Length: 241
Image (cartoon, rainbow, N blue to C red; front, side, top):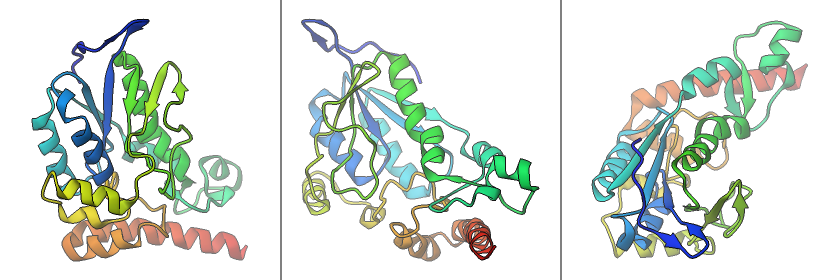
C-alpha cells in the first residue's frame, strides 16, 4: 500500500495511528469508533487470498470510507504448500519436518498458530512497523476464544496495541453496529472476519462457517470440505498408529 503521513503528533515524538481491519464485525466497530479520524489515520487489511464475496464487499465499503487504506497481500496458498494445512491437532509425522524424516504422505499439516502468524498477524505487524505506525488499533476482545498475546496498551517492537472494545461482549458489538450500519449476513458467524474460507483449523468455533458456506457458497464449501477431509483423515490415522 501507499504510505501517507499522518497528522497525529505527541509531545515526545511522532504519533501515527492505524486500524487493523478484517471485514468482520469487531474491526467494523473499531472503524466506527474512530470515524472522526478516518481522514488521517491508516487502515490496514491483510488479504490472505481466500475471501468470501461478503467479506470483499465489506472491505470495499471500508476502503471507500478511509483516505489511507492499505491492502497487504500474503501467499497463504504457497505457505500451505510448503508447510501444510492448518489444524488444531498436529501429528508430527505429517508436518514438513515429519515428511522429511518419516516419508511423504498425502497431506502436510501445520499448527494453526503458525499459519495465522505467517499469513495474517505477522505481515500486519511488519507492515505497520514499516509504515511508521506507533499505535495499532485492533478489534480484539477478552471474550474471544482465540486472541493474540498483546493486551490493550501493550508495546510490541515500538508499536502500542490499542483494543478499544476489549471488554465488549458480542451483543455489545452487535448493538453498537446496528446503530451505525446495516449488518451484513456473515456478521452472525462466530469468526465473522472469515479471513480464510478454507481454513481447516478452529474446528469447534467455525462449525457455523461450514453450514454458512454450504448454504450460500457450495463451490467454496466443496473446496473447504476436500481439505478438511484430508486433514481429519490424517489426524485419525496418526491417532490409530
